[in-house]
Length: 206
Image (cartoon, rainbow, N blue to C red; front, side, top):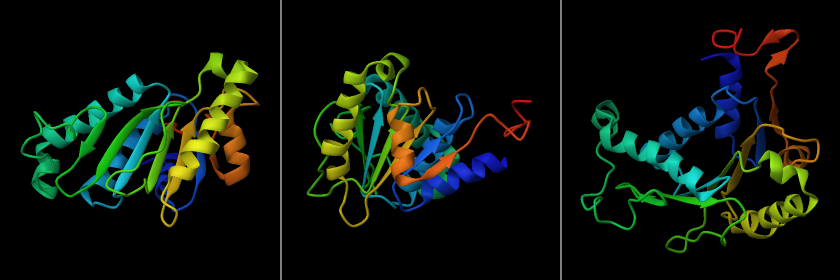
């Protein structure tokens, strides 16, 4: 993998709250999906909360993960079948909530919606906020404040107090965006498409 993706993987797997700022089109969401599948097959996180800009975006992401678990024969051969027997009728095998055979719960939410997550008295040990800001939203001070309040009053208090981490992934849309503020407060990585005059992913983007 390119060096920029090695940095991305390292940050996704670190046990601390952090921001991952990557340019659009540089596979940050693809690598996040791989990281989630890794957490699922090894049962590393009892409860994972995935938040998209809207519930529909989070559900689309879930459909991709479900398809890998259901249809990837190599994955199933190596790690076993993680799809429950009653998957077709289960309320816990949908594009909003997956519970794998090895006991991992993956829950989808839209940004700014709902309360914290608690599954069988367990709070999320990993919370992924993936591109939760839009161009229109960052232009409005009221919308920025609403999203920030939801993050700090709902999401952060809902994570597991001992093991919980938050990964906020996205592209900087404005100097006042929440991603930039979260990065300043919690650290992480900030990669640009062009650094020192060269592409950080020259194999794909020259």
